[in-house]
Figure 1: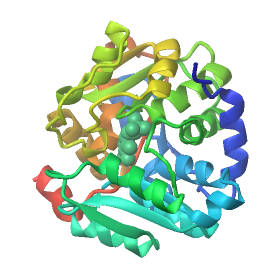
Figure 2: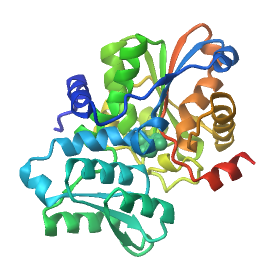
Figure 3: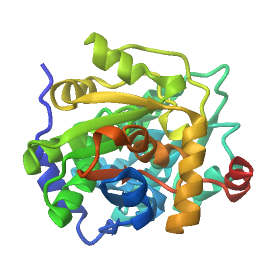
Figure 4: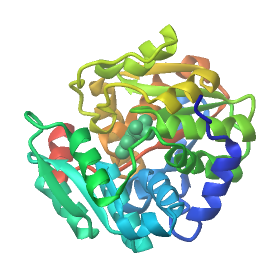
Length: 319
Ligand SMILES: *Cc1c(COP(=O)(O)O)cnc(C)c1O
């Protein structure tokens, strides 16, 4: 039996990251309130260090390393925000970091990870298995592998985003959270259940990658092929064992939105709220807008998960 993290772990994570992670602002928009007929509170994790909430979980996990783990270092495999979160957290904590990335990862992401001091190991995603490479590095060098979502310390760290939101604005009627592998959703659900027990909690996935919805509704983890969607932070193939267990017990439903809805919200965030949000970061708001008939007069929390999108891609999506 696995021991699931609890709200106490989220509260402990909040103390560990204090002074290292940004306490991101909660943004308001009269236009959004008018359009939805509700009061919206946007937790702006696009303004977090390295541009996404993943810094919270990574920093919390690395803060818990013992002396031997710190000395040997951390290994992670990711081409996205988790890579940068681990590399930056490791640099801040003076821990060596090795990041396993696909050879064809965008040059900007490889450069960003190296810029944060991470050692990048490239692999061929068509012929090599990144998990096997990660495991081999972990075994040979005694490195500790930190996965992107299915880890109690990662989940607890991600939950601090919702904890800060509730601490700042009080109880809410509903909370909309982007969903990939479920680290953010499960951590935020722990915080919501403790701080705003009546709040409805919704996970939101891209339509093309609704494994979380299928898993939630069928009661068992469903695996899918890598989905084709512009929400690259949610291209996961399955939930984790920890994240699924927490989601199953605490979340009210898992919803989906189309890529076209995500582009509409990217445009809304840029033109109305003057913020850059990556496609995955728009999942929560897109679902809230689609549900507006049921949200009239309510207090709604939306987690904006990240803002890392290449400017050329941002412009071509909005064009
Ligand atoms: C990783 C990520 C997600 C999904 O988070 P999970 O914990 O895997 O569910 C959503 N948005 C952004 C910007 C991300 O980087």
